[in-house]
Length: 153
Image 1 (tube, rainbow, N blue to C red):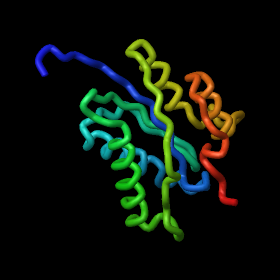
Image 2: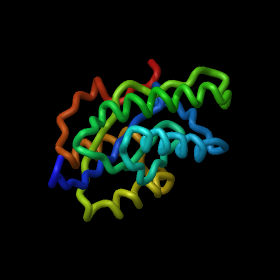
Image 3: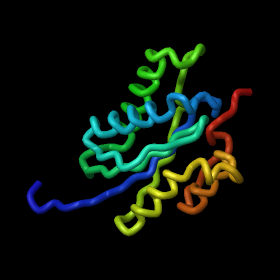
């Protein structure tokens, strides 16, 4: 489209099924790289991917012609397939259904990048669920506690 100019950023958060701490330090970096590459394959631009043993944060630039739901479907399905093919885990790896997606402006890129980069420091004093609820509340997202990322019952 002629004369269509845009710059849009999204921060996505998704969890390992049942929030199990399955992402291991020995291969975490490789998984984050795979997620970044899969994001780029969708036509988005991965800025940073990082996470903890039970969840992942990604920050990306996207176009108005790209649906975040399509990006997440592709990234989650292809990364879990890749991970299962690697044989890193004895049990089958799956991502939990759902994700969070939050948009930011150009002026916030540096701070969001830093926030994602420093996940280990954030989680010394804050659980994943508390972090996720905090973000939902900061963005004034109405949510049902029954549908927040579940633990195994």
